Structures are given as structure tokens and as C-alpha cells.
Image 1 (spheres, rainbow, N blue to C red):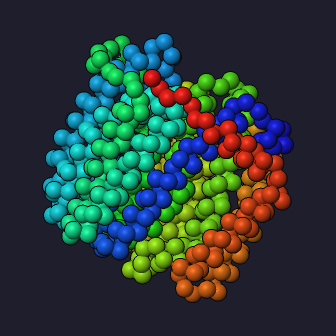
Image 2 (image 1 turned 60 degrees about the vertical axis):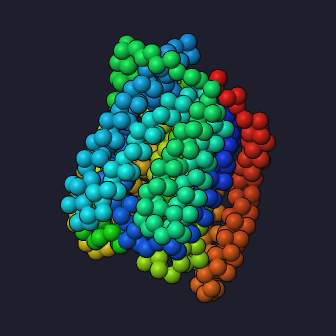
Length: 489
């Protein structure tokens, strides 16, 4: 097996799924980018930092969520799916209400820890998102179980569009930091309403303790993995906010925003598609699916990461304004972090699909143990140092995860390189051209337009030369995604 194109079946199906889901995200993420650009010009780094601090204060409870019971629906048998969904809904709502109540009590503690009294009110209000989100968590899991991309994408689009419009209107009206807070709540409410409209299942509120116990056995491990992952993804915010202040955290959060929107969202949608697809595959199909998904994740992720890293300055100055110039170098580093997380998704999904979520947990704990002291030692050097700590640990951990999954599935290193080579070489060629543009044109908007145009043209051209079968496969997959899967009923 020299390349992924020789792999039929699951590999192509998962590729179509990722393409449809990621393509559906583009519209929503474009709105997020536009609203963030507008808000960045209306609000200060300190106001962005305050919301980032509040979200960081809730990260543990956010990761616990519903203890993984909705994720257990993804691997449920068809004949008991809706019985288990009844249990998942009641458990999710109960836990969501509890987490919102606990968050309300954390406001004064967060205000004291981060030395800002405004967090006393901000944290409890943002905490209401736990309860709101729980109302739609089961419907979202049902959509994932059936790989219903239309429902999930519709819910995400409603979330980001309502959040952005609400935030902008309130910011223009002078509500400051509260424009961001209320925007988050309004977006979550829109997401839930959309899920209930598009997923026609209606609960009878008849939970089963038998189902709850079995779902918790699987979900408990998944939740533990999510807790460790979310702590690792947000602990840098805690260090930056505590030691460098909310203004520095505001710069850091904007540096993270574009890698998150364009690269980490690829990780999100890939994981959502690959988990239900891999969970039903035999070992041979799983091997093929892993190679194909890794290849196309690299083709999209490497190009985006190099583009964001090279054109970070014109991106930030053109979209957000000159007051965010202090985010440039951190954004370059965080683009590498986002790429590392993204390419690690296929391997992590393999472990969960074969019932070995414990492997992900065993790898996540050492990463967190390494990350925390690194941040404690170096974060006082500034936000770039915090970004370097995150990126370094992510790269090391995800390379190890890919190697382990490859060995588990008997995928030779030569096959991995053959599938990674087109993306790596094309990104190097495009990166050189974008670097020349960025250092030749000194007007931010013009450098951005010319740089992106040059980068996309050269990257796709080199992909066509190095791996012509890739574009044929992508075009064929895109054509077949024109008819989305049937909605859950």
C-alpha cells in the first residue's frame, strides 16, 4: 500500500464525511472571523482577556460535561439507541444544572485569584451555558451517531451567527465585555433550538439506571481524557492571566483565534466524523481509514498552518487592527500547536474506536505533567514563551501518538512518509513565496490578499504535481457529498 488512494471503503467514506463537515463549517467560521474582527476593533485586549479568564476558570467543569454519557450513544446498538438517549438526556440536564450552580459560586474565587472584581458577575453568567448546552447535548450526539452533518453544521452555524450578531450589536451599544458574555449565551441558545428543530426525536423522559451504568463505564474514561485535554489546552491561559494580566491574555487569545478557527476546527470535525466511522470498522478497514484520514488531514492542516505562520502579521493587522500587533509571534507558534493537535486526531480516534480510550488517557497525563512546570518556569518571559511551551509538548505528544497507532495497525513508517510528503513539500514551496510577499509588500491588506492568492495557487499546483490523484479523489468526494445523509428521525 504505497498511498492512501489504494484504500477503498472506509477511507473514502471518512474522507467524504470530513470534507462535508469541514466545508459546512466554513460559512460559520467566516462569520466568527468577521464578528471577531469587528469586536477586536470595538473592544480592548483587557476585555477579551476577562472573558478568556472566565472561560479558563470553568474549564474543568466544561470537560466533565455529562460524564461522557452522550458520547456513549455513538457506539450504542441501533435497537437500544433511543432508550439510551432518554437516559442521556436526563443525565445531561441534571449535570448541566449542577455545573451551572457550582460555577455561580466560583465567581468570587475567580475574582480573587485573577485580581479583577468584574469576574464575580461574569463567571456565573457564563456558567449558565452549562445548563443551556445540556438541553441539546443528546440531540447533537444522535446526529453524530448517524453522521448527520446537516444537523450538526446547522446548529454550529446558528450558534456562531447569533453569537456574532449579538456581540456586535451590544458592543456598538457600549456594553463592553458584556457584549462577549451575552453573545456566548445567545449563541448557545440558538444552537440548542436548531438541534431540536433538525433532530426530530422527542424524549419521553424515561431514564434507565441500567443504561446509565453501562454508559458511564465508557463515558467515564472519555470524560477523564477530555478533562486532561481541556486542562492542557487552557492551563496556559491560567498562567498568562494570573502572572501577566488580562491585557496580555487578551493578546494571547487573539493570537489563538485564527489557528483555532481554521486549523483546530479541522480537528473537531475530523474527530466527530472519524469516531462513529471507525467504531463500526474491522481492523483492515480501520487501517485504511487511518491512513486516508491522516493524509488528507495533513494536506489541509499543513497548508493552513504554514500560511497562518508566514502571514501572521498581515492577517492580524488587516483583520483586527494595529493594537493587536503584539500577538503576531505568538500566533505563528500557536499555528504549529494547532497543526500538531489536528494531525493527532486520527490516532486518538483509533484508540477510542477499538475500546482503548485508556491509551489516550495514559498519554495525556504525562503531557500535562510536562506542560505545567514548563509554563511555571517560562511564562514570565511573555505570551510567546507560553505558546512555545504548548507547541513543544503538543508536537512531541502527537508524534508519539501517531507512531503508536501506526504500530498498532501495522502501518509502516514508509507509508506514513509517502502520504505526508505531498503536503510537506507543497507547504515549503508555498511558504517561501508567501514569505517573499510578506517582506516585499508593507501594506497589510495588500500583503494579505497577494500572499493568500500566491500561497493557495502554489500549494494546489504543487499538490497536483506531487500527487495528482489527490485532487481527483477530493473532487470525487465533494461531488458525492452533495447529497447529505438522511437526518435522524
